[in-house]
Structure formats: structure tokens, C-alpha cells
Image: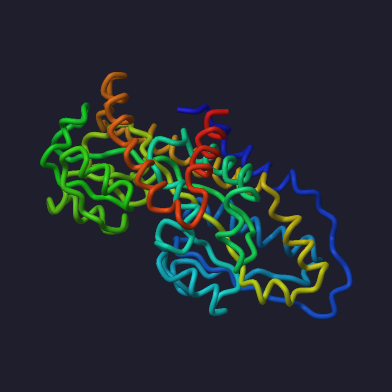
Length: 337
């Protein structure tokens, strides 16, 4: 696991690397709505959305304010894109994998075993955005990208230490790539949102789940799961988008302030905060007696080899509409650097 920077360093990145030059020339106060579907205790609310709102207010001498609507009040993971497009919110937090067919180029980021952690995934998107992914987001103003930590596997009764251990188990999955992986391994995927996971595990609806370490505390899984196996299977690309008409309507000084508040370092720091939270949850799990398992090098190689067909399928599915093989090759090469 990549060595992570302490959380206070992420705060410094958010608040210290952005040079503050207050904007001038606003004739009226502007309030922007920012919506996400996470609780206010979530690391992204505390370490990304609130600092963003504070920085915009600072850079505009309070002439532009950002009002945050958390907890899905203006859109859930599947409807947030429509909430932005329809002007229900000016700015929204989007997980492209939850909006199938809308951000097809970016769906390459869903493939397994491409990245080590959320920071690397975010860095690759910023590196390749203009070349390979800008077309996905032409209808919006992109404010920043970030990513969620890699998914591992957690079980209640039976530990998983090899690919064969998946056979016959009911495993909660959060996206199509995880579903295909469980099927490939002989398990039975159960597609459900992570907020249902605690009850499903306690009632035996599922035997285990793909999710990140950070879910352990957030969804109260400590005391429910007894085993965790590190796979670093896949993460989730995330993006904060703004309604294009609203962006175009802003004064130039307001646009400059928002851009100044959201350089690539901001999105990368948001990913670092995710990774740090993930590491802290891993430590908490060990302290609370959850047993930790890893695959042998041989088993890891088998698992990776078994998922290579998903890359071929992604290319075949998308080659008519884009240079899919080149996009995949670019991502693999960037992740290897």
C-alpha cells in the first residue's frame, strides 16, 4: 500500500497551495448551490466541499458564496447529473460509474487492477484529461476530479485467501466491474448500495462484500465482519461538475476565483484525504480483531490474468465510438509511470 501523507498535510494542500488574491468588480452577491449525497461527517464534505466554499468566499471578498446541500437533498448518486443539467443545483458531486452510458470514455477507470490507490487514479485523470476524456464532460464545467479508495473484500464467516474461496459465496458488489469479477470467481454477486450493507451482512443476505476499508467505520461494519482480504481491485472516479449555463453566466472575476480555488492539486488532495481515511480504518480494523488476509503472488497473478478479458470487452464495446484501445493503453501507461 502506498505510503500516505498525514491528513493535516492534505489540509495544507487544500488551504495553503492556493494563492489568495481576492477578486474585485462584483456588482452583486452571487450564491451557488453545491449538492452531494454524503453526510456532513464524510471526509469529502469536511476536506473538500467546505474548504472549496471557504476559498471561493475568500477569493471574492464574500461576493460569491457556495451553499452546500449534503445528504442527497438535491440528488442521489444516480440522479445528480440530471440535477446539475436541469439547474436544480449549480454544482454537484458525480460518480460516473453510477450513470451508465453518460461518461463512456471515463468508464475505463472502472476496470480492475489499474491503480494502487485514489491518488494515483486522480493523477492519471488529470494527466490524460485533455487528450482522452474532455469529450465526456463538454456539457459541463469541470471543477475538480478525485477518486475513492480501492475496493477490498470483507466476509462474516469464511475468510478469503484464494480465488477458489469465492465459490458459492454471495458477495455484495457496487458496480458492473465488481459484479463481473465475482461471477468470474464463481461467487454470486448481489448488487446493492453500500448504505444497505450492514443489515445485509447481519441478516445473512450476503456473505461478504466488495468495498473500501473506509466503509468499516462509516457504515458500522466493525463487529459485523470478521475477515478482510486486500485485493486493491478497483476504485471509483469522482468529479465535481457545474451547470454550463450557470458557469457561462458568471462574471469573469467569479470564474477566475473558482478556477483558482480548484487547481489539480485540490482534487489530488481530496483523493489523498480519502486514502488517509482508508488507512486509518484499516488500522482500526486490526485493532478491533478483524483478521487480515492477502493472496499469494501466484493467486494474485491468476486473479489479474482472469480479469484481463474485461479490458478486451471494454475495448470491443467502445471501439466504434472512440479510440478505445488507445485510451486504455494511455491509462495503463500513465498508471505504470
